[in-house]
View 1 (spheres, rainbow, N blue to C red):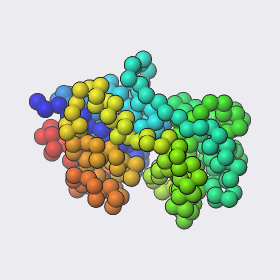
View 2 (view 1 turned 90 degrees about the vertical axis):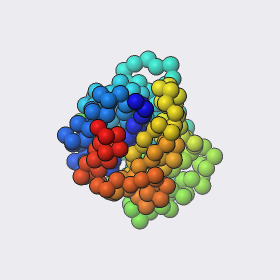
View 3 (view 1 turned 90 degrees about the horizontal axis):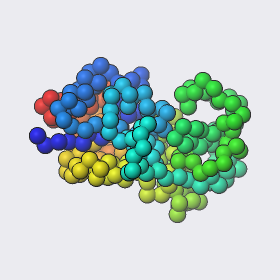
Length: 267
């Protein structure tokens, strides 16, 4: 058997519109693993907001969080673990420019912790936390975060991304987070999912030509280009579809990943 490494984005790809793994998608991914293939999660989400899916799929493979900012084996010491960070001074500078940049909030995240510039009017569900206290205020952050998030309005998103890129061009890249909200993620320059996927493929001794990658947003662009077979979701962006090897017939709401993978691997 020609063993494949299957890299799956979460939001808009593996997860349905209720942000869940459907029974059918679970079944197909489980059968792929039992057939001897590797499944790895490659997401922009922090670990604490993706661990539930790692557990649900009973994965043992390394996973990618923060769009490549963290590559690790959950709850294990792993010699190949990689983690990148953004200078905390950038977070404080963005907070100072919050009104001028039309930002709703500035937030910073590490593997298990997060900070935000203000608590007033903040929806705790955004960070999947039942408890957000004064300790979570951005001013209390002492170490460099793995990722920064800023929220703006859709009409400002493009200009905000350009302005942040211009100001901090030598050190960061700005990416959209996906979904209906205008969330921009600021990551260390040159860090993306393909970088994380290369660490995992080297570790598993899987040639990139035997990687199948699924995604829907432009933060999946490098990953689909790196993979031997990059698949964009039917609900994906036009940019991603233009560079993908193929596009699913169905959306994430219709188990498009499961249908495509089942047919491709003859599961």
